[in-house]
Image (cartoon, rainbow, N blue to C red; front, side, top):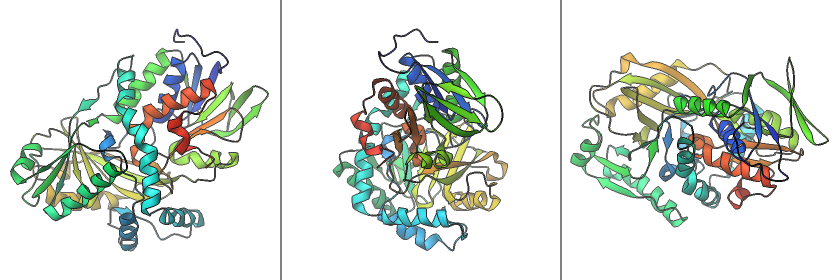
Length: 419
């Protein structure tokens, strides 16, 4: 175990359920505070939403999903299976209950609460990555602006209005408007259809799968064990907890942290957590390119994010509300390509590889769930939506502080799971 002094009165051991970026970051920062950790996951490191996403550490674009325009867009998209936002017409009452709550939160007052909640996470998220990479997590974070591109200047004004609202809520975002010539300097892949751009400065990106794998190796090097099994239940007793698998030996510790992403509600609702988490599934793939890719590219009009990846371009998009374990849809991948193809030149779309679908954990009010629940010595962390990569390490650092001191950090009050 890492040689540090344990916080007096804090737990000596923890079991973290979930080996994505949120769970492993929590494990790392618990170790930093002298806690011995066991990590449990049903499928392995980075097996959920942490592997194939766009990998943006982009506090400037951590804009809550629940703005009024999304509700209007979603209603128009219901009957269009190729739309970036897809809700299958199923008889799932839990899904429709979630969507009803989400719709009720698609108003400016709720959106502003989510922005205010994220302010401290956004302010400290890059620093939290730097702490990890300076202390044994051997994976780079790459500084680069994110360039949003548009077919018309009028479309660009939509993003500019969003950035202005972010600034009004307390988070100014450094950005520069780009004319067609400057746009092509930043995005050599831009097709003639694109005539306007907005460069978001001060951002970073990572290879998310590689970063989470490196984080797992660092946690193991500090003395942790990673076990593979699906958790059946978590029981509390006396001064500890027991995590029971469906089969095999249980894991005992003084505290448990559940960070299971889109599967969080299965356990959390037993402990008084009334805010549901649903899977907003995203798809990605990698394609070869014939021109340089200096940095990430955002296509807001079609809800597609593109990131330099292994000498090519990782293309990620769509928001599909389906069961997290459902198979991927070929039609969703084709819809992403059909929407992005007219906007980017020099992309060999027919040579795509590394196809992936992953369930991003979405809450109806745009705020994550981080902190203690009604079961003693049990904590949860999840529901970060599309910003789990950016907010994973800072969430782990703040939650480790709460677990070891018994005091809820001010930054976590808005994310109280029992709200």
